[in-house]
Image (tube, rainbow, N blue to C red; front, side):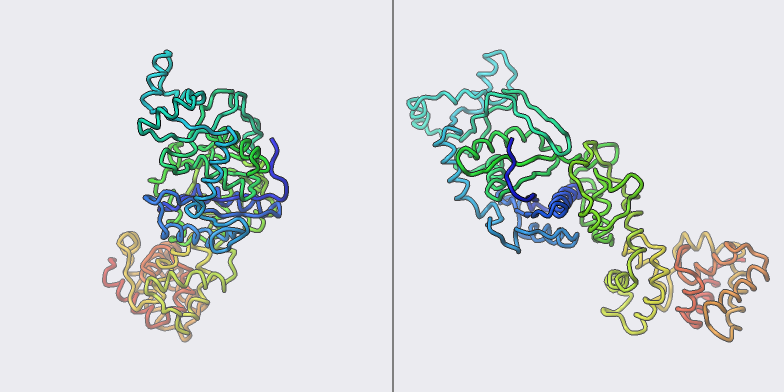
Length: 494
């Protein structure tokens, strides 16, 4: 099997049919990474030949997801290139021309059999009808074809499969072989003249010079058909060889089942909306079948592109682990320079109505001061709304669970002592607040730190988890802090 010559050219060719699946984006990422690693080209092509399911809105959204993830393409929609157009709906004449050439060269033939006739022939031969088409129409005479046409039948166009084993060396699975006769002659063009995916996908790959097809393991059974078609396309001068194939492991969900479109974890938008960083999500998606090193899980998109080797992708199914995805994203979030963190997190705070867009000078100063402390406690950017919201409101709403845990018996005494200590402070600084509260609550009341500061934290932030307490109180200011302690005291007991 001869691959097309020249630099590596990979492609991503989705159908724009609604939500974007994380497994699809993993495939796009691997194709992008392999092209970048080898100094090749990454092509995006839209398979939009099903008008009942494909929408322009879905296409825009899909391309936007690629851009957000940082998967830039060298050819395709919005970029152009020498092999356009890059939407299948705009390439109909190309497919008709290739189909005609395949028919003229004898690689394809007209088939008139109905499904019922094929089933009847299988049963008459003592065979299982599920075996499908039996290649019987290969041998029709011109007179028989004319008779079928006189009945009003419209033939489909089928590819004549070779009478030999079909094998290839897969990037991921090594040697794969299908026995001669295992795959029947398949339909390329419907009776109404509409070309099928089985024709248009390989034809587009051939005309666009794709050298490596990296796609899901679920498509592996169709590969013998593609290899046979490539041989025919090479013979008629449409292709220059057969691309190398790599069948990527399935992405599994809970219970070791394939992550379906109905699974909430499969929806790519969920991660983007929650505030995963592009670099964090790229990092995790890359780990669904590949690793940069045995003892290393964290890397940047640039490091991925530098190290990625498709031949080291695992053939074993990859399980989508949300907790690991979150942990990896949190690591990337903590590593962000403060300026980048602020730029990324501000839209979430503004969207929740907590800060102006852009923030006022006072809000910006508060954000800049709290940012390094907040980064250490966040998993995704949307966490900022709950974590930092208390700094940008006059009053705070205390979470019921937090009140039940920290404003129960004995909390009133703590809040009273804290209020008295803070009211007497000559200066409102983090260090002064820390000293005063420790003296009043730990030394004065004899409370353990968790019992001493838990009620104060809940009173100030409304939650049991917040940025560092003393720094938060300095940013809130004396007036708002004391008002919140008083409000909490009204609900606390003891």
